[in-house]
Image (cartoon, rainbow, N blue to C red; front, side):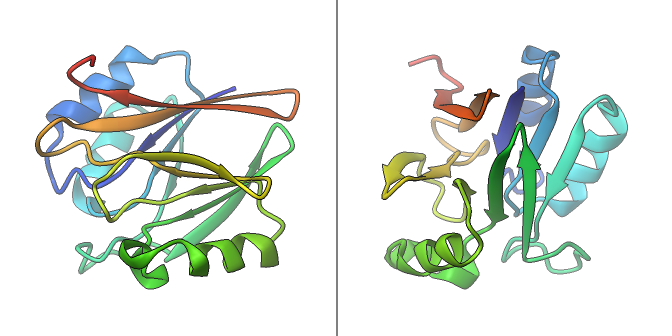
Length: 157
């Protein structure tokens, strides 16, 4: 199973559209917040994907949850934007949430900085931002309970 992880496009749709077009074989698109309005457009334009969306600190009128937990191929994912977990100051609050919920992979945004770390048996993945200088996203393959996460830069470097 292939999962596309986006975050922080802040209303810009060009890059998210290109990403979804590049991966038609993906099954799930996760958006880690800060673009509620444009994620609705993506969902309408690309209905073949299953979507998991959470609210970011700039999604002022969003009726999205602050976090979501889902399972794919036996792997438990925790999705949040990160602002309520103070991710700009470290991962400790996310680590507690992951341990409390028996999570295998934590997906978050907010910092606009990509991250792919494996700490104490849990993946912590921030796709970065699809907007701004040197945009990025995460592409995760899950097969037989194994997780293969990658950060992909839009400029190909």
